[in-house]
Length: 463
Image 1 (spheres, one colour):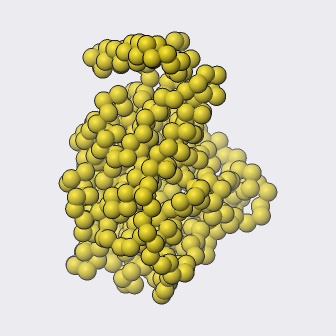
Image 2 (cartoon, rainbow, N blue to C red):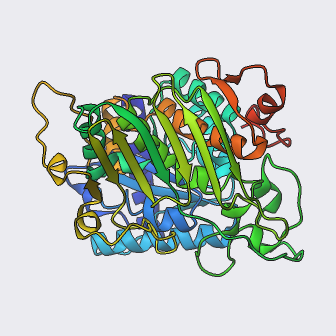
C-alpha cells in the first residue's frame, strides 16, 4: 500500500508541475488539499456508461469525497465522451473549479491496466458482466457489478470461484439489500412473525415483444464486434443495441442473446430478497418446472407471460409470474407479508404494479395483520445485516476488506435460481436440481443449457 501511495504522490506532483509549466489551471478537487488526500482516496473506473451507469451507479458513487471517479470506458466512443462530460461537470460543480480529470478508454483491458485505478463499477449489458468482472479481479481491482451476475449458470460459477480465489471485494448491485423494507420483511419472516414459512410468490414486470428490425450500418463510434462479445455474430440494428441518441432503455434487454429478460432483470432482485427471508441465500431449489409464452416474430424474443414453480429442500415452495403484483409475498402458517419497491431506479423502468394501498405505497410493506409490521425484533432474535446504501457499503468494504452485503456467491445463487426458472420455461417439464453440484439429475438436455458457446476472443478464459 505504501509504494502505491508514493506512486500517487509522484503522479500528483508531476501532474501539477506539468500543468503549471503549460499554463493550464489546476483542475483537482478541493478535497485533494484537505483531509482526503489522493493517497487515501479510492480511485474508481466505470466500465459501461449507458443508462444504468448515468442514473444509478455513477450517482451512487460521486457524492463521496473519499472516492474519485477517474476513468470511464465504453465500446461506444460517443458514450465515453458523454461520460467524461457528465463526471467532469459533477466535480466542477462540487469543487467550484474547472475540472477535466476523467480519462476515457475504449477497451476495458486498457482501463484495467491503469495502475492508478483501485476499483471498477461494471454497468455493461448482461452478457458482459461475468467476463468483465473476472478480468477486473484478475487485474487486482475490486468490483461493483450490476446484476444479474452472469449470462449462464456456468459463467456465474466461474465468476464466484474467481472472485473468492482472488481476495478482491465484489458487490452485486442488488440494492434491495440496502432498502429498509426488504430487510424488514426478511427479518419478520425469519423470526416467525407469520409462523412457519410455507410458500413465496414473486411478481415481476413484463416486457413486450417488438417488430422486425432491418439491418443498419454499424455506427463508426461503436465497436460492434466487441459489443457482441462472447455471443454469436448477428447483424447490427439500433433496436438490438442501444439508442444512438439519448439514454433510453436499450433494446438488448429484450434479446435472449444477451440475457433472459425480466426473469433475471428484475428476478435477480426479487429472488435475492426472497432468499433473504427464506434463509436460502447460498443454495437453490431442488425441483423446478413451469411454462411461458415466447414471441413468434420480431427482434425482441425474451419470455412473455409465464408461470414457474420451485421447491426447496426445506419444503418451501416458490411461484414466479408476471401475473402477481410486482414484489414478494411470503405465506406462513399464521399470515403473510408482502414487500415491494416504492419507486423505480430509472424513469424508464416498468412500473411496480402494486395495488393502491396507502401504507404499501408509503412503506413498501403490507401484511395479513398490520400488527405484524409493527412487531419489534428482540435482542436475542435474528438481526440481519444493515446497509443503508449499496454503493457506500461496497466502498466501506473496499477499505475494510470485509464482505459486502451482496457478496459474489450470494449474487450467483440468486442469478442461477432465476436462470433455472428460465430453463423451466424452455423445457416445459419438471426437473430435479442438485444445488450443491449445480447439475440437473439425469437430464442431459437441461444440463446442456447451463452454459453457452463463447465466441473467441471474448471468452472467460481470455478475459
